Length: 311
Image (cartoon, rainbow, N blue to C red; front, side, top):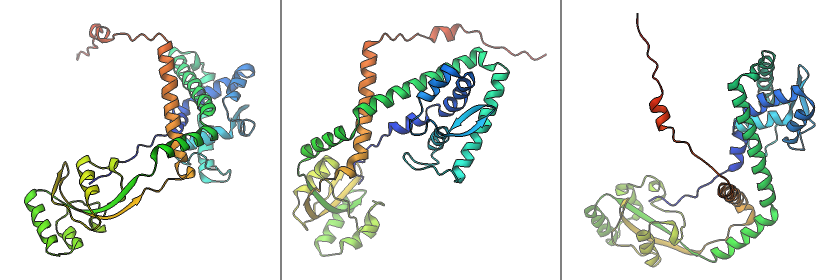
């Protein structure tokens, strides 16, 4: 019997990974090499704590520590908030990769590849990604802070209240006939653990004697929860059918659900608030904007097919 699993979403990782190589290496190289106003635009999108930390110079263009850190995070070489040590293998590996990419980008500029239509299109895409990420980061920073996190925690704590939880163990079999046989043997005093080992098809709980983690009424299949919560401590249930098969359930314990602390809930609250804020902002922008989707079906139908003739 599987319990409902919570969905965990991290928008922060998405912000770090979206076209990060293109943004850091190519766009940064183009703007930095042009200097002046464009260089200041690059500076403005870097976190203030690392803006002035130049870790390398390649043909008079600068590579910042944040370039290395962001790329390491996007590659899952370090986690968000983890310190990237200057003398680590990861730092030196990523630094050399960025240097190589910068050299290639500068060579592309030398050959005026940045003036080609396809490159202009890609740079425009990188610019859109960078600006959209900065917009989201600023929006999230203004809405998701210690005060709003604590307020949502208190609200959720109040809504949760003091819920009842129970712990049960069960034997899962494929058909009613086998379930009835198991119920009969339990009524005759046979060991629940032995019958779990002999009959249960639930591979997740076999080694623990069929014991499930504590759960509340809304965390399990409706019929399973209704039956389990109706039992007295120590009581066995009659066979019950769910989508997973036939169950024999024994109630082990009841308790009041412990309230999670703010530190325990903080990351989940941040993820929820971030996801909610992004959806709210995008919904607002879509309502306020004119968006036209072109029908490409006829375009592709009329498109001439390439024909290769063999001489």
